[in-house]
Structure formats: C-alpha cells, structure tokens
Length: 177
Image (cartoon, rainbow, N blue to C red; front, top):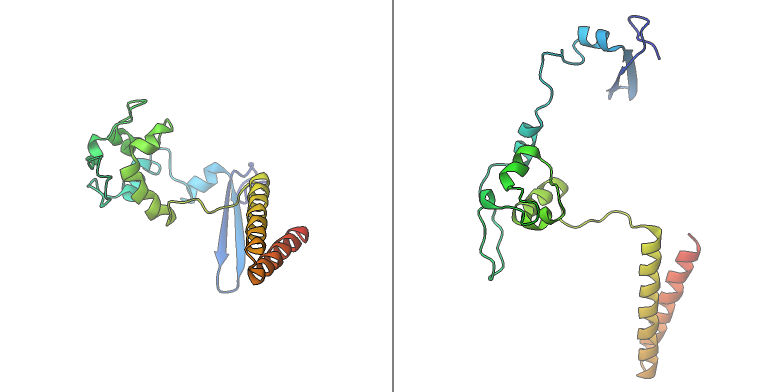
C-alpha cells in the first residue's frame, strides 16, 4: 500500500471510526508524512514511559490490605525478594516484568490485589484445551453414574432416575457438538 500524500510505501495505518454514521475512515501514510502530520512523535520526543504506566497500574507503594497466614507474618512489600533468583520487589516495580516462576509466589501478597484490580479476578476463567474438557466431562459422567448406582442400591429410585436423565442430557448435548 502506498502513502496517500506521496508515493512511498505506507507504514502507518490509521483507522478512525465515526460513531454517528457507523463508518470508518482509513488513512495510509509513510513514516515521514505521519511525522509531518503529527500522527507519530518525532525521534526527539520520548515514547510511552512504561515505568510510569506500570506505576499507575500498581498504585502507590503501601502495605496492601491482605490477611497473611498466622504462621507467616505480613511482609513489607519493598522488602520482598525472590528466594530463587534474588529479584527484589523494587526491581520488579521498575521493570514491570517477572523473571522466574517462583517470583509469583514470592510477591503473591502484592500481585493478588494487582491482578484483582486489572483482571477483576484471580482465577483463570477462559477456555480450556479440548483434551482437558473431554477429561473433565468423562470424570463428571463417571461420578454421576456412581451416584446413580448408589441411589439405586439404596432404593432411592427417584434420585436414580433424575441422575439417569441428567446423564442422558449431558451425553446428548455432547454428541450434538
């Protein structure tokens, strides 16, 4: 694609969405023309300050309101250090990246409120791989069959029939997929 102002190859693509008529306008520019029209900053202008952005996300350095386990006293966030690699919490705040997997546990007291604030949850609730979904479904059906047999053995026939219908419903739903 070529720049709309000159014939150089376009490297900056801007899409503007107009809410009033639900249309979009696309502009294609080369880097030089984009700088001339103030769409990207000059070389001398600093780019996004990631440290400042991270500081906004992490909030002020203060003791989070998290109850610690009785055998483990609450640590001051600035004093936290990863036992495996030696990364200090201050270094994490400055860089914005964790290095080794043990840092998640070492900085748990400060990461949990951060994750809660960013993702509104501390638990993953996204999609699971097909093999895991299949294993979970099979385990659930096995458990329901065991409950059904136990109910029939205990002569609780209404419960056994309810469980039988639930098993059939789940199997029919899975076959239709």
